[in-house]
Length: 412
Ligand SMILES: Cc1ncc(COP(=O)(O)O)c(C=O)c1O
Image (cartoon, rainbow, N blue to C red; front, side, top):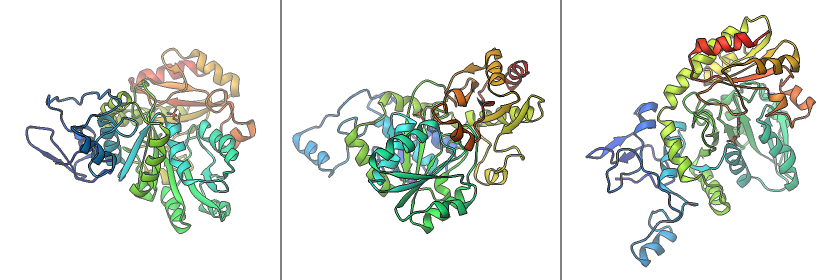
């Protein structure tokens, strides 16, 4: 029987789920693996995985402790390194993303930082899609330059842009697709071919799509990051981040993470693993609600533009249909009348919440230019389509008629 304590996420995981062993493989459907991939049962034979709130783990004797520290035998040592709850979560996300190995960290930003920093040193350069989450932009523009790490933004819709941005010291291509909040979509297949040709590391922030909708590794990505705070938790309760990908690269990521300490708490890992059991069913409803809302907004007189990947008017519609199973649970739209119209709209909402999170059961409205992306200069916002009238809606799981009714009464 194989214990999933091992960081490497083998395709076949044998779990003692029932009275007898049960073999779970990649032939099982996404939904089944999301539910049935569990840590080994304890002696109590619990059905639901317990929470391992422990800083360290014990050893039978001095020799077994020595052997585990030496890496000769497998075993948990200390929760900054590994913990059964974290291992279960990591193993599940690896299986969902088609990854070999992973690590769970405290937040989505932590995931991005630890996916990038082990592979960069002073004098290096990376290429990134221009439409990035606000804090990712801050990391590239305000933090990395302190260590003499440079970057070039590309719009990402034309592989020719990437060739133009390439330098001798370029190490990484970082993409966010669909992007927050402009919902820009980038062709992962073309990006995979580009990074392979130039021997670059290819990293994708897959937070908006989730592995249920899009698997960047299938298109050549080396590492995938997640803000588990969003759809993975799905209920706006905790912060979390995941990095998954190729085993040899993850060894470096895990080395950095284990010795600098951004590990996810076992409580958050336990909660997230349970949340993932319902990811597929939640994403189906998020996406169908978002698509219906996008169609409603598209023909509304007070709306100038709707950004949603599965609307045929989306500029990368064909690419989205190729690489995404569904259109996602987030859309953005431009209200006629700029900032004052956007603020009025938000103030008139009765049910929909005004907050900065996304991927929650509750529908959320955000005004990026005065919140999540307010640290960007007006020019930087303009370059990625964040106008003063842009509103981002994270479409929740309430009945779609109630979501539309609230939006309709708040629009001019
Ligand atoms: C695309 C994307 N990446 C990363 C993050 C950062 O995640 P966290 O807030 O968990 O650090 C966010 C947060 O909104 C995001 O939208």
